[in-house]
Length: 318
Ligand code: AKB
Image (cartoon, rainbow, N blue to C red; front, side, top):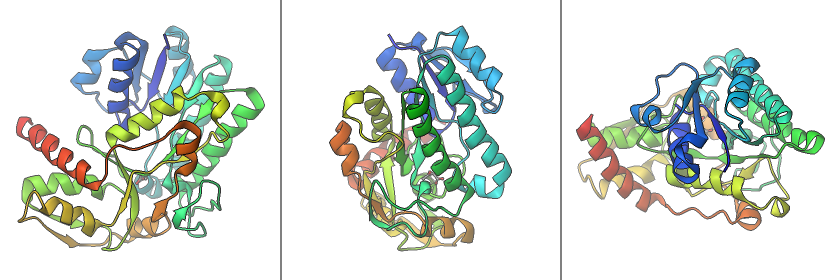
């Protein structure tokens, strides 16, 4: 049985990925780790939790040694908007954190999954049907760390044989844990506001298309890629994966089908709008489909139905 370490386990993706990994590989075989944010009861009660700080290699090494780890899901990172507000911290967490994790993976012969993002593309990338292999010249610090991270992971695979794999996640929509300061966060906030106040003021302009994905598909992508036959992978870091592409008005119309009185208006945040405009409108993820059988389950309609149901139940309990 695998022994897995998850960094960033308290974050939006980490909190749900950890529980899914525990279900698949056994509670005691998945070590959740976090830095500052308080873990949920679900995370704490379902298996081991350790404090680590990815910018301090000794804290990663201690946990890998203690639990005999052979696989790392490295999710600790700053998202795009927060990174743009503090580029120095973003470099430290996103780059030095990844470098430290790769070094420990090399030393202790661990496989490593780490997500890249649609943020690894930039204004000179073809923004429609964005190919797997194309120009990557992002103009945000988040994008710079994502491209450098993809290259560094490929380097560790080729140079040291570390089994590194990754996907370029689009915006991830979920109801368990809020995202922490990304450009695509509006697509999560809109559901909360629709249920609570029946209206939402969007920080991106009408017509701003971005790739998106519902959390169950995001988790499936990470686990399926790590389970894929290595011989079938021509690419490693990182695969385009998407489930849907829409602009704010489309998610609003979909919500209206369940909450007819829902309305959307717009108050554009120039920083996040500028970031969104350099990201793909829609990616081509056929390479992931060919090499390891990627196939999302949810589209905008099925995601919206599930999100509104599950989030309403959750908000009633809170
Ligand atoms: C962000 O908006 O920063 C993230 C991402 C697409 O990488 N959700």
